[in-house]
Length: 120
Image (spheres, one colour):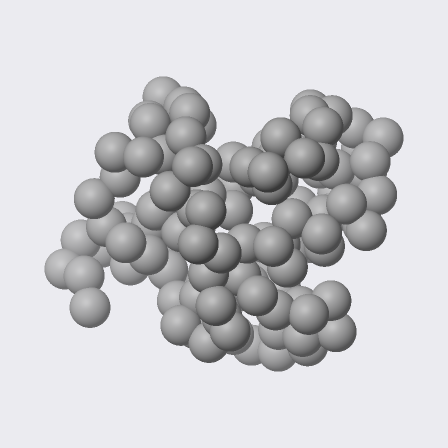
């Protein structure tokens, strides 16, 4: 468990709240829930149904990632800057997973091609 209170506050955020914000973001930019689900299932190994269950549960981001069936083996290919920080340089493993998720959702919202988002 981290001792940084700022990180811990993020880790204790409820996944369902974050999921709702992600959905609003992609739909506001003209994209679909299905596209969002596609990248989240790719990243975490959850099925679409499991994502819905996680969103409806009180699971925190820490629990969401701890329970993830399997992180995709190509996550190390997720690179770039998010909020002025290179995602590949983030030292805390959980924060890096959260920022990978943020980066993928941002790419969906910006309309990047799915094969590029999924690092195919």
